[in-house]
Figure 1: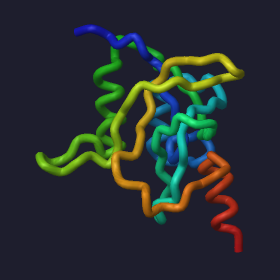
Figure 2: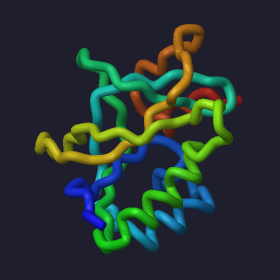
Figure 3: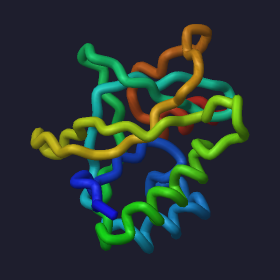
Figure 4: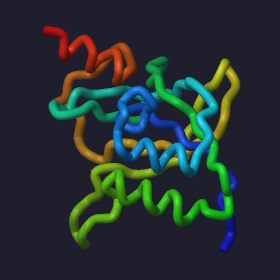
Amino acid sequence: MNTPSINHLFVYGSLRSGFRNPAYGYLTQNFHLLGEAIVKGMLYDKGDFPVAKPFNDDHFINGELYALKNPDEFAWVFGQLDDYEGMNTEEGIPPAYIRKETIAYMDGKPIEAWIYWYNGDTSHMKPIETGDVMKYLQQKNKP
């Protein structure tokens, strides 16, 4: 089986290090954190959590860039992430997210990476102009 040439992952939501999500343990077992990065895109407030869509204008999403520790395990590692992100659904049910290639920028340098984009309609959702899920949730949850 061929190993894909892209072995980086960009995360912007619950898998970021500051969220303390149980799935973050899985991420750190299989990936090295390279640091903070951005991608072109727009965040939206879905209500229970923010979601992201690709965007070509000068809107950026803040997140973290990771490198896969063992590229030979790509299919298994990303298969687990695909499952976590709701990509594996019953026939006829569209997945909540889709994994796509994107360009992440780390210190201004472009790096090819995978990202999980929201696969639903965002036309009725409020855009999150800051582009940062953590900052947005901190502001939203202030008393």
